[in-house]
Amino acid sequence: MITIETTFAPLGFVELPEGIKKVDMSAESKRNADSNTFVQLALLLGSVPANVLAMWIFEKIRNHTHKPEFRMKINQKEITDLTEEGIRRVIEQEIDIEMK
Image (cartoon, rainbow, N blue to C red):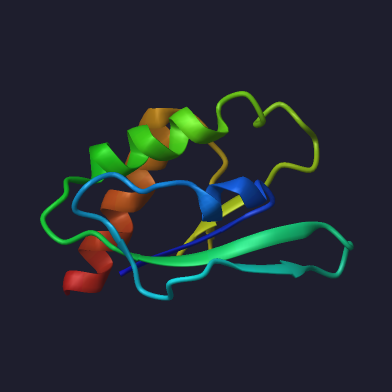
């Protein structure tokens, strides 16, 4: 399972790629200590490769990553390289940790 937390709230409400399922059927929108709205969602990847999820995430956020308030975490790990490759790398690391 991969958990995503981001200030890009629309990510929680768009259709997921085939083979990826939300564990909780509704994304949860909250406010953090800085009063920024963010969304949390938990995803089951099944047999979907990490690069499919990374490509999907990047396609949804790429026009928003330049905003100073944009943040994204995967399994509580802050994404600092908001490229498709950077997102894929973190997803793969988190999958490896979970499988150990």
